[in-house]
Image 1 (cartoon, rainbow, N blue to C red):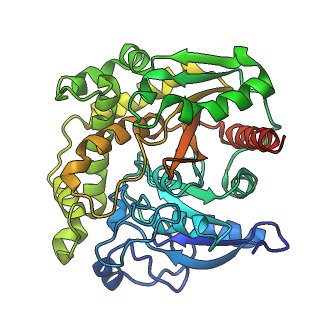
Image 2 (image 1 turned 60 degrees about the horizontal axis):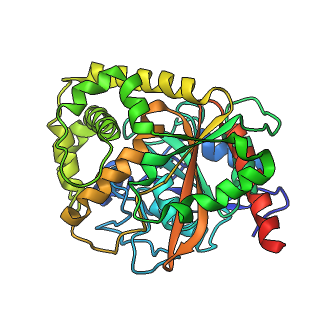
Length: 405
């Protein structure tokens, strides 16, 4: 499928402007009440200019407001790794297109996890860039404090190649990581055994860079000690018997509060005027967002800055944080939303680390465990996107050599 340019065929989420088409935002009423685009989003245009071929648009969760991947109106793209499981969202169709070999790579967006989650569920690579380093012009906003344009690929070489086109950053030579910090407490949020999630990367890092690069950290304690504004949200957390990390649960609360407020500012006028038909689950989230207020928004912004500074100090220029992408395998299709409450809470505790800090994150597929896809994520400082993409490519080559030996 790859073209002579080396960039190949790609698909893009139904959230990007393409001249002559309506960006449907996952909802028929949105598509019906919005005009066709008069220009193409710069990200799409850059890929076309580089020689890639756009072969289609992909289904997404309504208004980008879910990490499940189920769409009440257009149907749910079939997870190529597990047909009875959700594909993950909101960039569901983009992930499925790559996982099902329908495209070499695909564009998505990631606000709260909408590239990282479907990449994990569909057994492919997914990259969320540092906030603000890839243009979001010509992309329907969800919540601008967190919105990013990300992408999917089946191998890290193509993932890196797409990054060379889209990242508005100077290129860097592959660089040795100063250390790889394993967030031990975060792996306790995952139902998949620790060794299954970490062993492949640990072995590759040890072989390439030596075991002294590996460090361990209780990330929740570090965040609690270094992000003082989180105290405001920790007091509101309902800590029950189910294992959680209070500081990361508070981080998730701050992220979702700011996300709701920005979503309201972006879309309340349209929702009030059109009264769109929105599917179950998402309609509740939209209603909650529309009733949000500006209360504590300044504290949410303080949390963002404090976390960015704290993680910058922890990682330095070329440190990397290892965390689970998600807290377990993809849930079954049409699971009652209430049954997913604990899973979603744990997921957003993990997803908010890069989301709130604005750091870059890559989800790396690790094959299957109990016949379901497994992944791990690496996080690097804001602006270290090229370093992280090079690192993943190096680790992958080493892993392939080990498997071939």
